[in-house]
Image (tube, rainbow, N blue to C red; front, side, top):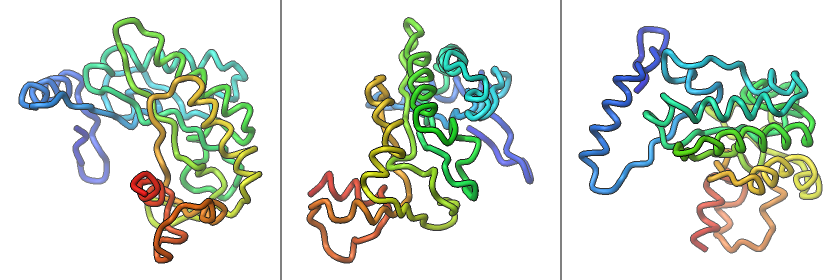
Length: 219
C-alpha cells in the first residue's frame, strides 16, 4: 500500500487502503490475513493516523499503561480497516550499544522493562471490543545483542543458553503469557541452539533461526 515517491515512501491513504483491501477480500476464495509493520502505530504505514514515538520512548515514561494505550489506539480504526494484525511489539532486549537496526525500536536494555511494556501493548491491542487484531512479538530468539543489520547480512547471537533464557527470551515468554497471537523469527544464527538434538544435515548448521525453525517444525 506504500508507494515509492523518489527517495521517500508515501504512506497509504486510509480510505484508499481500506477500499483496496476490501476489494481483495471480496475476490479471495479464502479470507485474507493482512498485517502491517505498525511499530509506531498505524502512522508508520498509514497517513492521517495517530503518531507515536518509537518503543524506547514509552519505557522512558516508566509507565507501562502508556504502551497499553498505544496498543488500544492502534487497534481502533482505521487500523482494523487496513490490517488484521501488527508486526509488533518488539520483544528484543537492546543490550548492545552498537546495534544498528533494533536500537530505539526496543523497549530497552532491561529484560524486566521490556517484558512489562510488551505485555502492556498486547493487552491494549486485545482490549477493543469487536476489533480483534493479531499481535506479533519479534524477533525471536532475540535481535538485541547484535551489531549487524540483518536486512544486509546475517547476524550471530553468541550468548550461551543460560544467558538466552535469562535475558533474550524473558520478554518472549511474557508476550506468550499475555496472549500474543504470533512470534516472528529472526534472520540470526544462534550457535548455542545448534546442539539441541534437532536432526538436520550438517550443511544447515549455523543458519539463521528463521530457517532453522521452519526446518525443525518439519523434522
